[in-house]
Picture (cartoon, rainbow, N blue to C red):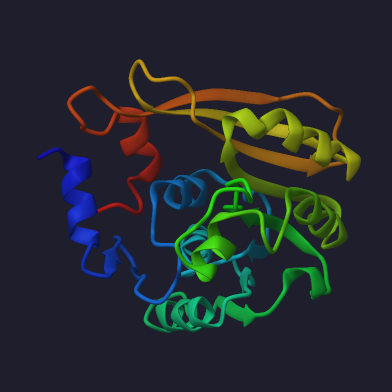
Length: 246
């Protein structure tokens, strides 16, 4: 059995253990997955002291960001989640962690939030609405049902100040349309990481960081392959996630 398969089997019991915290994912419609871990480890934080995790689900991204900011005085992370069960689970995951004083979880619609944040992060829904999910809650979490890409970017623009950044992970084929929406809100692409699941496979994901007000150009591009042909993690993937994966 490959290292990645063993990791997935270990998480099947409803709890995913990381180096400094654990995430239970029994109530949330969306479970802990590779996309969330990648974004949590890669997202640009810079000089951030206030972070908004949009659609926080289990609280995974909030916990990863808090760990990365734990040495910075005054740093705060707010996770917002529309689904009641997921919000309860996120709060419980946060309360069991050493980062509980840094993180707040709010149940509600991010479109109704107020304020400004230094950094915003999101593992957004990306499946087309014509794909039928087995449950309504899973549809909310996986499809562009409750928050379209247009609404997401409008919300990001409203909750940002002139130096804010926004990091997300999206299907690679959506990059062009996502970029157009970013530009409409006055954001420019700062970083881009093209992700392949295995060596020899096509690019499947793009991790992106946008910043408000920069010239429209990419300043940092990279490629990341997650697994070798035998299913073991590549050196680059292991290095990116070494502070989190056991």
